[in-house]
Length: 438
Ligand SMILES: NC(=O)C1=CN([C@@H]2O[C@H](COP(=O)(O)OP(=O)(O)OC[C@H]3O[C@@H](n4cnc5c(N)ncnc54)[C@H](OP(=O)(O)O)[C@@H]3O)[C@@H](O)[C@H]2O)C=CC1
Ligand SMILES: O=C(O)[C@H](O)COP(=O)(O)O
Image (tube, rainbow, N blue to C red; front, side, top):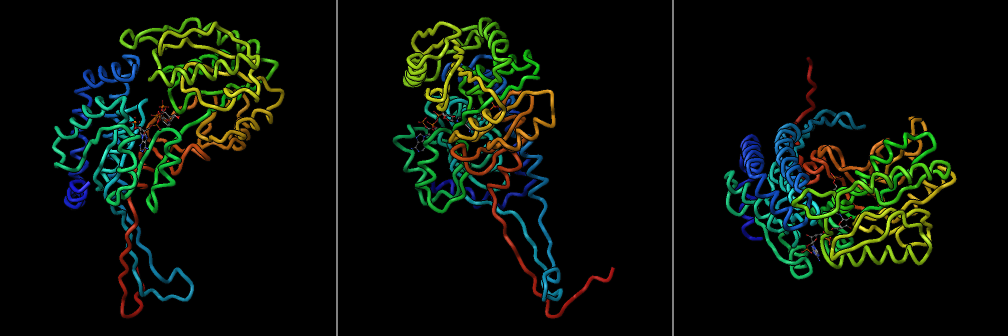
């Protein structure tokens, strides 16, 4: 914490173009090291091999984009004159600029240990902050490799520290440390507890989701089925933006379920090294939790479209039809390859289910009627609604935010840079009014 504090003072005096130059260098090194870092992701968190490489490449691109965006938005300030406010002459010139917050504590989750770490590191650095990164325990080795790329790029010593350790053991020390000036956290309910303990700090919280997929009668069902597979089952459903409940109009439900079933049958289940679609979930306790949701749905009469199968942490993809609101899986996020389908008789019923959730991350709606889609988007209480595509955070420069228990603040490159700065004002007071004559 102390080295982060002193390194930040020097870093804030480093010209913006130079900070950007170093970030571009780090981005290039990160991409050069994509193979060993991706290998760590495969081994540590069972991310399918191709997705692991994409995560690293996407992260390099994110760092470069942040450098460019930072140069633009941090290079500009505001100039205000006093006579625009009633009762004032033009005697005051107000200059505003964006200044760093200080030490940023960055805590990413296991599912994108590299990408969700750099989405905090790069904006923090371009804005002149220093970083203490607490990587997820599963994903820590990948994070350390990634941080090494920043060190190889030549960032000053102490500016980026990676502190490994279990969140349950070192979390409180870090989040309640007086040297921290901002916390950027992505993860589960832990974020809610951190928000309560953190005190008067700027917080960026990206938490869980129960993203709903509303399917109307006129939707292109092949498109919907393809998106349900991608949105519900990629990385075995371990994405905050995964489709976590399908709300389909009864009249097209049979047809949609058949189409999704056919595609589920084609998913390859097995080790991440073989680039299988469905790989073991991250921990045994996670697998047990998922199983608990499945058993609850079974007891309460859900229709199993496939046989439930589990070997250790590997859970076969499962579509549960005829799920009802009294089942846990209707509301809780499995963070695994199990997807509930609720049949609805009106659009309002779908919107009601979506809005009754304590989460409000993303959602999606499938229809050919763009006017209806916009009305539904406006009615859904979520940070983002995707029309005719599955929920997704990317591209990484898009704003990304959750309502209700899904978060505080907004991410995305531009929003993160702004969030990791504060406004500083200098007012020049003139002895007598001065009007620019042109
Ligand atoms: N909205 C979003 O963008 C995203 C949300 N999520 C959500 O995250 C959850 C799954 O991810 P998961 O990694 O298990 O989430 P967790 O909340 O368990 O962990 C997230 C991070 O917090 C750390 N942590 C744990 N306890 C503490 C503590 N007391 N103080 C400080 N840090 C702590 C973890 O470290 P350690 O690993 O050592 O426990 C990890 O680095 C799901 O609910 C999912 O929806 C996930 C990704 C993105
Ligand atoms: O952590 C997550 O799950 C992400 O923020 C989702 O990112 P993605 O939509 O790009 O997979």
